[in-house]
Amino acid sequence: MNRSICCIGAGYIGGPTMAVIADHNHDRKVIVVDINKERIAAWNSDKMPIFEPGLDEVVKRRRGKNLFFSTDIEGAIKECDIIFVGVNTPTKTFGRGSGCASDLQYWEATARNIVKVANGNKIVVEKSTLPVRTAEAMERILSQHSQFRFDVLSNPEFLAEGTAINDLEQPDRVLIGGHQTPEGLAAIQALSAVYGTWVPKERILTTNLWSSELSKLAANAFLAQRVSSINSLSALCEETGADVEEVARAVGMDRRVGPHFLKTGPGFGGSCFKKDILNLVYICESYGLTEVAEYWRQVVAINDYQQQRLVGGIIRTMFNTLANKKVAVFGFAFKANTSDTRESPAIAITKMLVEEHAQIVITDPKALVHVKEDLGPDADKVQTTADPYAAVQDADAIILLTDWAEYKTLDYKRIYASMRKPAFVFDGRNILDHAALRALGFEVKGMGK
Ligand code: UDX
Ligand code: ADP
Image (tube, rainbow, N blue to C red; front, side, top):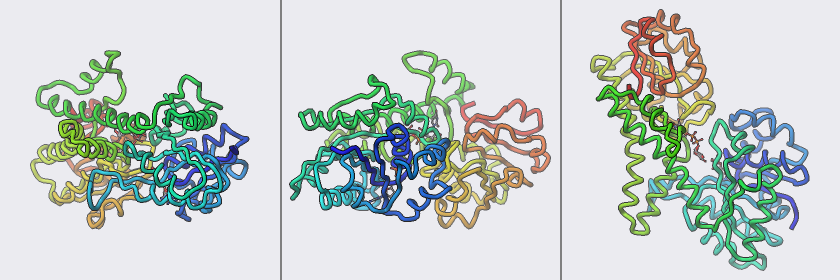
């Protein structure tokens, strides 16, 4: 086995993961390849294709030394004995399982490419999130007409956007699944050695292939379920006079529950949660586990409900009409510290506001580039500005949807002066100082309060 590593797919997962691996393995050549020329050009430029705190430094430290970005996919497959596959696996939008199942066409194309050009035995590592037992299909494709052996491992990525570098540097665990055969165990060892240069041994967890594949879906389903649980209670809090933050604190102090992922908001977004839960639902259904499928489907249903509920509350509070009222949407990214807007609650919420004929101005420090594509035909009906002070000029309301820290420190006195009265603030993330805003004259509504 040689020590070179490549990753097919230079996306949110492949880029940062390989950069950190290269940073901790100077004696290994790490090549990240992609069919997308612009993406590779961006990785090779001063402006990274994704925004991630700390990423620039790591890439600049190792690029050209032992970290390379290239479009020569076949060359990389030939050169490296460990091949990570981090291509996209979006939810299918057509045919059987549309809206639920994973679209595995990019994965399969990659597997076929590996078989075609391989010049020796390879370890193929699933990095993309995949349905359980995908490895089985991959093994079948890889074992066709080849004199070489391909050992398939599952090594799901748990990094969260915005903290990707830190999550990679100090992972809660690195999960490696493989066959419990001598060859499978040797492959697991070879991959463990890559992470072992910086991850403590006890945090490298090895399992069988299917457990590893399912654990990734299960971890995201659990996290999303916590968000839906607290969001469902935020509705009840608003009816009963309980304060959802007090409830979350009280519940989270129980060590068996834990304090994380209990913040109410406009619903979860991001590329993983919805996709992975629907994928789980689809898998359960395909095994005839209808009740289990329904249980998890409800996590997504509550997420949609939370967004409708938020807009309903805004309409009610603003005297049952938004027509021609100017609303400033603070935040378009699905969470703070990322430019990513995939499945961002702001998309669905903005569309609902457009239906109400509100005049919408969206502001966001990083994510405005995606507004046009995300809103489609509705994009013509909204304005955008990076300057929150410009967004609130003559506005009737502010709707805060992303927990960007900068929104906490704006000059709200100045903002109040430039808005129409009564001036409303809907703090969809409960990050602002509501008492201070009320003292300035704002009418304030938080979530679950
Ligand atoms: C998530 C998982 O955390 C990661 O392990 C997995 O690999 C990919 O999916 P990410 O999508 O980057 O990562 O975002 P995350 O920080 O988990 O947040 C997901 C969504 O839940 C965001 O929209 C966030 O605002 C929301 N959220 C999170 C809440 O509404 N409340 C919370 O308490 C936590
Ligand atoms: P993730 O969030 O899982 O990293 P992204 O969509 O950010 O997903 O990145 C996946 C990358 O995989 C994209 O840059 C895409 O161009 C690349 N890709 C898709 N199919 C192939 C393929 N057959 N060969 C190489 N790269 C591919």
